[in-house]
Length: 112
Image 1 (cartoon, rainbow, N blue to C red):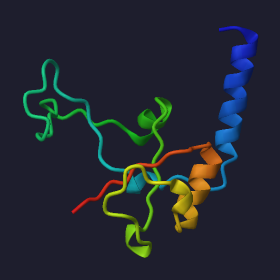
Image 2 (cartoon, rainbow, N blue to C red; image 1 turned 45 degrees about the vertical axis):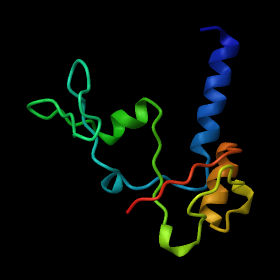
Image 3 (cartoon, one colour; image 1 turned 90 degrees about the vertical axis):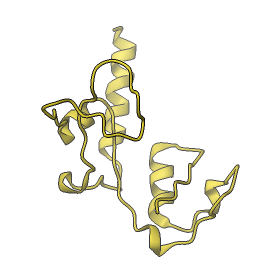
């Protein structure tokens, strides 16, 4: 890696570390595990290895995964909106996350 690329990576990591909105505590992260080897025959199945091989929150962070947990019931979001303008968000935490990370898009996921 060149010195310029390395410096840019360090700057990006420092910026992420300074974000005002903290990620969810480790105990609130969803469970993660290594999937079975080979073809995935049923995408809806857990597809865990036998025995199960869990993946830690630190391992997830090490590969760049971040997790925030928001109170979805506190704000109203459109059931379906394509495209949805994230500037219409009334949730201040979502707006802060978007601004902190430079996001200019948003996906809406409805969990029943």
